[in-house]
Image (tube, rainbow, N blue to C red; front, side, top):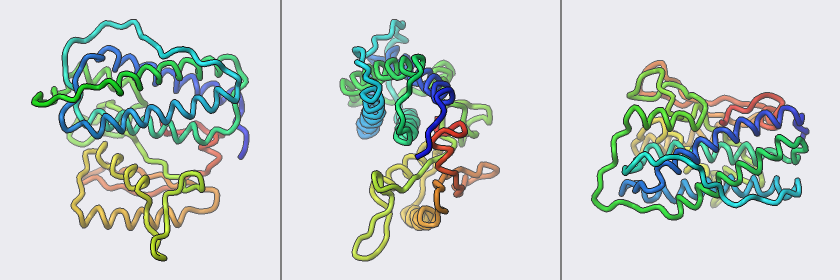
Length: 276
């Protein structure tokens, strides 16, 4: 694996730190909110995604010899009572999973003091979010609160602006992921053989389902099966040294996912990663 320049790594860690801090502050300001009844599974997935990022941070911190700080406790005013909606939680989960993938591609520990401090701060904010998610209260008969303009602004700050979202204005910056990075590796396989037949792993199907859900795309059983067949071909056809990146055609509805490929060098930092 090629080494990312320390200057480039510091810049990207600072950017990731800012995104994670804003996401932490979003949930800290809504610490007492309940979670919509249909969001029980999504809440667990969100906690798992945050824990995954925390594991990657601890790996890099151990390599740097960093002693972690306690979980952060942002000093931020509560926005009052409310209910988290499922769609927003799915988008935040997609963001954290993409962040996990990017961190997993980093093999060299940072040496720049600013980069090391960014790791420490991110770890503290992730710890805060994990604690909030693990203490989540699932509503029983409370309808999900519609996202108002203020909530949209708050959630938009957690990630880079995405492509236009279905059923929303083209300039909406809610954080819907622009793309899905799928790198089939020995450490995290996306394809497996079952009775001599290649198929997608459950983890890969989950990533694909979450990506489609974040775009508000619901496929029938038949169309989902056909999409997974195409996805299997796309992953298996990835050129040597290339990683499959799923993007979305948005010129007309229904939106259509399509494949592209990116060099692993990009994911290792020779160019800015696009997973944030």
